[in-house]
Image (cartoon, rainbow, N blue to C red):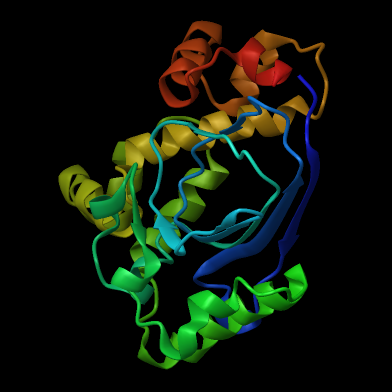
Length: 251
C-alpha cells in the first residue's frame, strides 16, 4: 500500500513550559490512500490534539496516556497540531487525575475554558508554525494559575528513563513512599502505574533502537532495551502494541 505524503515536525517549548511540556508537534498527511492506517505506540504522555481535515475539523481533544497502541486511519488530507506533555505535566493544567482518561480522550472545551474561540482560530488557513505558536501562547497564558508538577513524579520519571532493570521497589524507597503509594501517585499524575510506565519505556527504547535497519540482532536488542530476554520482549510488544517486534520493524 502506498503511503501518503507526510510531514512531521517537533517544536521545542518555551523555557517556562519545559517542566510541563515535552514538545509541540505537527503532522500533515496529504492524500492518504484508501485503507491507509498508522500505528500510534504508547509513550507515557498526554497530548492535546487539534485535527483539521479537508472535510472539516473536530473539537480539540485531550488524549490520555495509552496502555496499548491505537490505529489512526485518516480518509482525507489532515493536519494535526498538538502539544505532548511530559509525564506528570498535564495534570496541573487540567486538575483531574490522569487515570480518568487513560486509554480514552475528552473534548478540550469540556475541561478547559476556551476564551476567544480558540478552537475555531486553530482551524483557519494560517501556517502550521503559526498555529503551533497559538497553542503555546494559550499554555503560557494559563501558567499563572498552574501549580508546578509533582517533584516526586519528575524524579521518578527521570530515574526510570535512566535505568533499564526493573527496580520498582528501589524507586519507591528512594522516594520514601510505599510501593502502593507510588502507584497511586503515578495513576494520578501520569495515568498508569510505575510498572506499566516502565514497560512503555522499554518498548519505546526498542523501537528507537531500530534506526531504520531491518537486520537486527534480537537478543542484543532485547537486552539493550531493558528486557530480560527475547521472549520477554516479544510478549511485552504484543501486549502494548498488538504486534511482534518483527512486525514493528516492518511497519
